[in-house]
Length: 502
Image 1 (cartoon, rainbow, N blue to C red):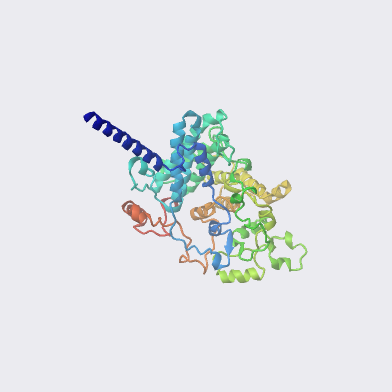
Image 2: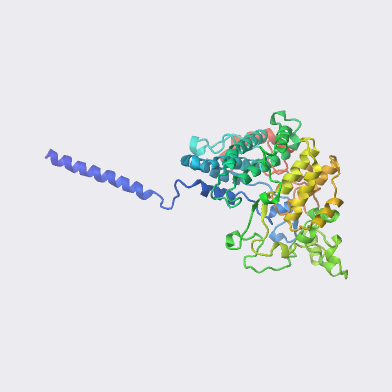
């Protein structure tokens, strides 16, 4: 009898445990992706590392103006933003985890991860100021969901160190001509990635120009000089062939050029959007041949009776960013404002590549540093090369045209005037490229002078940052408030001045 009972109990236990196992198996998500390849995560990071042209950012860069309030404005009345960069940083962390699982064959992704950590942390601190860094991304591994806010100085210090390490780590891979998969920017060429790492580092160092003399522990000038003076160790993006740019295509509607109409019908007239005066005025003042490529003459110039109107710089006019939208609309209807050149920008669904960091910027960054005395070298040659690469990017390749433009706008030497020339030309080269960099450079240098007028929605001020995400007040309030007190005496608005821009 006992044997029979034991047998029954044994069968019941076997059924129970097998049922539990089956239940656990059934509860697994069949659509879940486990042990994803590092190359797939890498591709996703690339998709989310680019900033598109023709956005609100480009109006805040004062490249464009919009005169229809229904579709948007350029009033600078932004307040807060989000922590989108941390979503990508979690993806970077996952790429590191998966690369370490694979081992040596995937080790190059670990070097690239250091670049992306710096890239996205810089993106966040540029917007807000102090941000979580040293304790960030530890929720899953350590249960720390309340990271402290690191000072902006410490964030930049750590990012510069990450970039130095990324360059060092990439060097043997470049020497071995190692390729990485999943790369639709550089086709896996790590030599180009190494150039990007160092060029981005120059961008970061230039962004800290206001802190170059009062933060000796950052060695801003010394780092800049070391990079510029040693191209063998620190290769750079100095020609357009190495640009970090998103190339759109025509085969997939999800990757068509952002300006391309969804129905494929290009209407070569858009009275709602016009070129900005801050941008156009520099082009016409300097007799810049790029204006004939990117813009159209005003309708009033076309109807003036002047047969040569299309070849005259006086035929191009931009709308002032601070102007009331009703006034801008009246000007547009009257044919007094220039529109974009649709034949250039919309020649096909692939449009024009969106440069995220390019040769012209790097050349101008070097010229700026030499002008400021950070490194030895000929600022004039880098200034001219920056212009040349930008002009060529916009399709002006005639050498005599480029030479004439350079002659008319000769570098004024390592003076304040020369510095303004560099900064203005860098601004021009940013047109529809590099996201908010034109605004960030203005915020740091005041060049070019931005328009402020009656349409400004921020008390006649150009904002200097974004307020922290409102969600932080719920999930990490104590650390956020400590950071606000440290930086802005407790205030959190778009007009606070961060450490890097004081």
